[in-house]
Amino acid sequence: MKRPVLNLKSYAIAIFAVGFMTACSSDDNTVTPETEQEEEEVEEVEEVESRWITIAGAKMGDNPGDGNGGTLIYSITSTDAKDPTVQIDPFNNGFVAPSNRTARLQASEDGNTVFNISYAGDTGGNYTKYTVNGGSDFELTGSEISIAPYVGTAPRWIKLFDGDNTGSAVYVSTEHQVDDNGTPNEVTDDTYIRTSQTIGVVTLDLVDSKINAFEEHEIGLSDEEEAQGYYISRIDMPTLNEAGDKLYIGARVSKVDPTTLESDSDYEILGSKTIVLDYPSLLNPTIITSTVGHGDTNGYRSINSFEYGGSVYQANQNDPEGSHILKIGADNLYDDSYDFNLDDALGVTGAYVLAWRPAANGKAVLAYRHDGSAEGISGRGESFFALVDLNAKTATQINDIPYEVDFELFQYQGYAVDGNEIYLTQAPVGKNGNIYVVDTETGEVTKGAELVNATGSHFIGAW
Image 1 (spheres, helix red, strand yellow):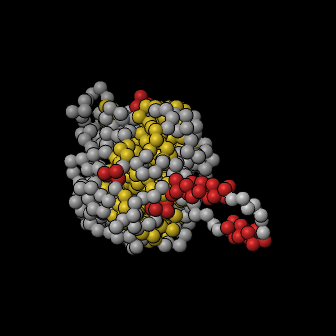
Image 2 (cartoon, rainbow, N blue to C red):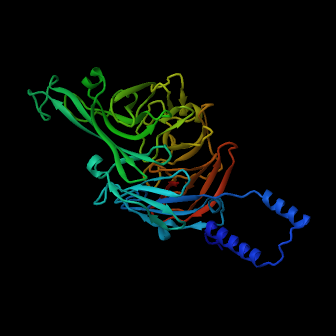
Image 3 (tube, rainbow, N blue to C red):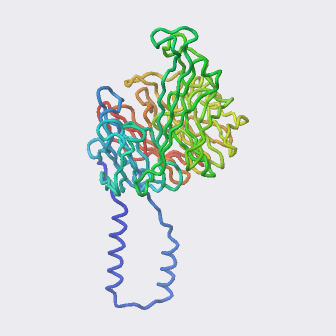
């Protein structure tokens, strides 16, 4: 028998009220040395604070693991999240987060608020904010606003770590340019000029639901790179530096064959790149390049870079040498003396970072797959979790979490961080699993509440 999820906040209030009424009904107000000592002992009892942990599940659309059937969320206390006798079923009992496809969710640092911007469909680009009340009770709070006029109905957005005040969404549009002597269907070696790249960046006031700023810029790579057909094809994951005066935007670089204007799939991967903007003005774009890592820095569904210790640490993907954790220093340039190769650290080939999140101590939980990952029911590789130390540049697979071929984290979005503890979800596609809590300082792993799954569906994180 699984015990039901208990709202500990309500329970604590009720106990306090009963105790208060009992105390007030007593006529004996005499304070003796014995009662005074008892009061001191009571004061020494340490309170166990609990915060909300919100779990998200992505429902199957047409195929197992596609997540296109919508997103459901459910919240429990962190105390219950650590209890394996607790059972939660978001797919039958959860709150439907507005979104045509998988919702892009963010949460406040204390877990009391969930932010959502709908992805695609008639409501695509709509920003909503919810107060977390426990279970499926998410109370719409404040005004709604659409950022679709600025960045479209399928925006790539993120919450900046500035006290839960600001969100930022981005887009890039591209167009192959040719001269008057040719057309995209009949080109010669000298007709391709370059691929234009226009980025748009908007910042959103998460508190008052209003647009702070919006800017568009024409950007470009070096003349040599562009002549070969390279261009930035996707951007995502804006990250604020410690000084609060620069915004870093991750980028994916693609390549077109200049002789045919067809997409090139067999080409030299360039050094990882990031777009840097002044903040909060969003002006003066520049592009910085790593000589340590190669491949993309835009990530996918999960936050891909974080500020820690005055620098920004960024994962890359599609690196021929396996994913790296890269470092951008306080000078707003890549610190190429910081070489953290996850292939070397994990002892695998082709490590691919799917989602990661550091605690305040610089130790992180990282989800990854690699060349040896078996393909499961979703058609994607089996995934794993690792404990990472940014200072020591070490990464170790977490073996206290069960793995199987249908456990994949390609769409994984979030981890809940509470001090040095990181909460994550583990469940294969279409199968039950559990919440796990990793103490990043000690490495201890706690098996928590059971997650009830649905056919073809999967869990995409904790907030």
